[in-house]
Length: 431
Image 1 (cartoon, one colour):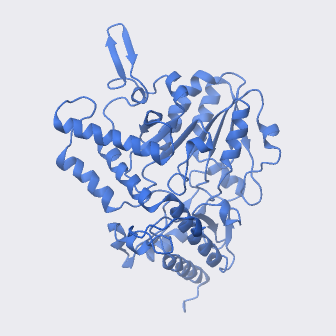
Image 2 (cartoon, rainbow, N blue to C red):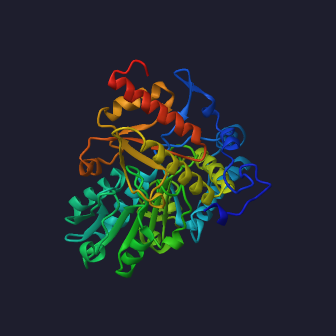
Image 3 (cartoon, rainbow, N blue to C red):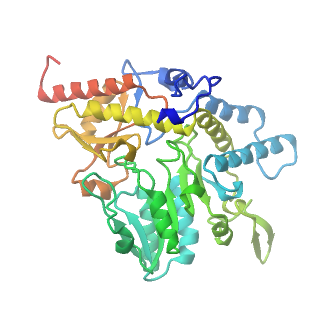
């Protein structure tokens, strides 16, 4: 995979062979220098949130130090600087995901709010009694509960695409089995945060669009980790969060096809999302501002721009290649452990940098607590995937997830800590 990735010799983050210079990258993340319980931090909970480089931290502080002001309103210097920086991030996001225009980019708080925006605006105008919404059994609650509420309110029907023994979508004959003349929306996650499966969303979106079905992709676990181009995917909506891709918390993105956004009603109303207000009523501002009521999260959006710059400098192809190598190595090491159950596809090209597993003799919460004593941070529980966990026949799993600053040595530390935990539960004091 690396052979197809050009090398930039003047880029300190890229090694001569075209791979990421992880040791150099790690120098930009202050939190990786700390210790937990006296041991170096090994942060493997990136599917929940990523750590932040100094470039993002400095951009956030710089806004408050030098040009803190409200945007789109003031004509003074600080206001213009803040507005320009905010809108520059919108343009960066559009370029990053291949959107045809910055007007297609709406800033919200997180992926959850982005999906709710579509459910409350487009959904309530286009979904009616007897209509169908197609999801999968692997969806994060954020891409399930809003549609459940909409279906209950409108008298619509939810249909769920099932999974096979490798926790891939069971797509044998899926268009005929799930898509009907009453199907109005296909809403699917690009990458499962529960087991790491990468879904063939491009092919699924193409099939849906041939039938006139609107499509929404939950990109929370894909946009931070691999190249994503909305025009190539052909989707109508894409939702993702800044905090999972080196950016601050409290910033999410909704990409929408412009003609759909133009016809949609606002999600929230008040200041900033209007062009004219009289005592009799109001006229909405143009897209995207009609969806951004009130003072937005200005500082964090601007800092998100620094995160996009950072990832762009690394190159998303390299990010994906690094995670594939780490995941492949981690899977090979984990498979050597006794009694371990690993979820997700065997083919590394079909999974992201997420490994979900269980040790039958140790509850996931107990394992997470023990690993924390070794400085290893993983996620345990149902991962906001309770229907998926029930499908797997478990209450939860342990989940390790990787990013650009993780190393093979950290994988070794994870394996050593798991081995120690197993020995402790066996009562093996010699270990």
